[in-house]
Length: 79
Image (cartoon, rainbow, N blue to C red; front, side, top):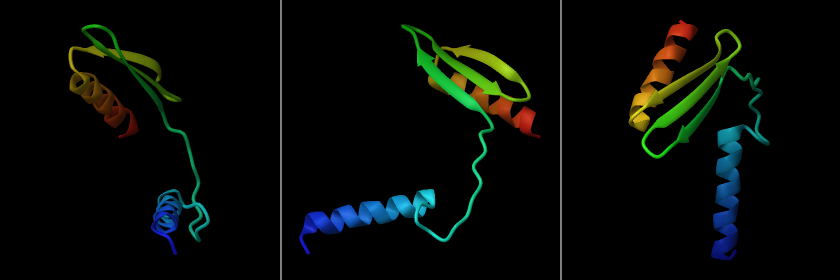
């Protein structure tokens, strides 16, 4: 078997393991939130939408600032 075929087979198998495609695992997918990140010249933005809290927007100087704000908001809502 050529090396390319082996590599392609491994990638396909890995994808099947991660996503559960063609596997014996049954799972249910449920969308709990939608998060969009954006960057302007000097600020980062996040839009978080959940069924419970609706749409919220966050801004920060660094991506980590905005990501932390989103994580705290989700932790509070989900607890």
